[in-house]
Length: 130
Image (tube, rainbow, N blue to C red; front, side, top):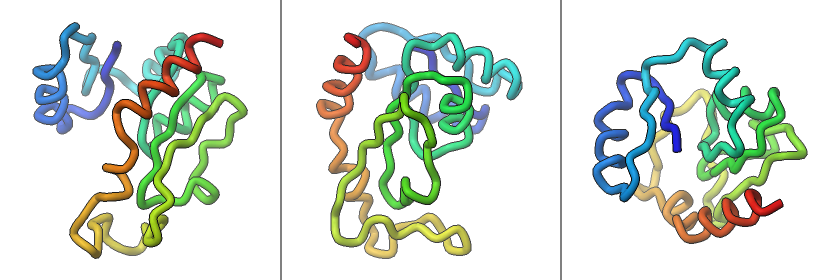
């Protein structure tokens, strides 16, 4: 497992790694965009939210699991036959509009909470077995 992100993501990444049984490689804040693209090209699988790296993984052909909550995968991708989109189809999602704040107007993140770790892990196993 390799974790990526910006240097500003370190508090969250540290919280995640404290909960892990096996320690990942942490490359947050340590890669340039070309280095990230090369890393993603070599990866067996990427798990991501709707992000720039999601699009890079799709562009280099990496199998990926894209978790969407407030964003609409029909509008923001990924565009790849190797992508599996996981999302909750609750009544208020998708709700995100680029001109607005990313904060939930109902003060919940239920659309993300409904995509459970066990569901993601089941899809990971399925994708890695093929």
